Amino acid sequence: MNVLSLQEKFEGFTEHWNPYIIGELNNQYVKVAKFKGEFCWHSHEHEDELFYVLEGTLIIKLRDKDLVLNAGNMAIIPKGVEHCPVTKNNEEVKVLLFEPKMTVNTGEEENTLTMVPDWI
Image (tube, rainbow, N blue to C red; front, side):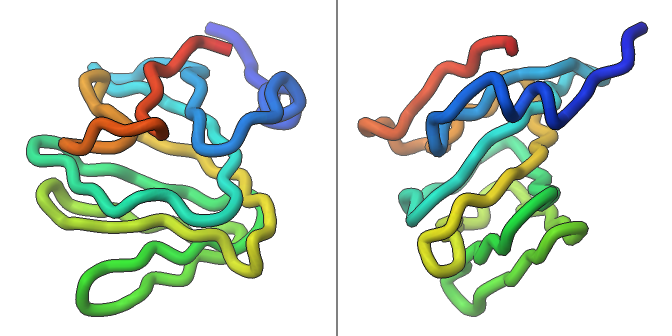
């Protein structure tokens, strides 16, 4: 058991849309990521995904509405729901993610944004 500093973890990388693993919990990874701009539309057939915004404003586009998450807000995207994360005004957003270990960041879509997360 260790105390983790999220600030130190975020200082350890500069890339956007590349999640890093900081822990595991009940067969899930706890990840941190910096988002900026617009990601791709995707879904996760078998996994729910939790987004917790630590800094900035994240908009999660859904096909029927947008979810606006400010710092301190979170949303759970149920498995199978198509979504597209976008940052407000193209600003950097710091996010904490909880996902099953097998979750691929681009879901069923494989493209240049697909990343295999590393530990940080």
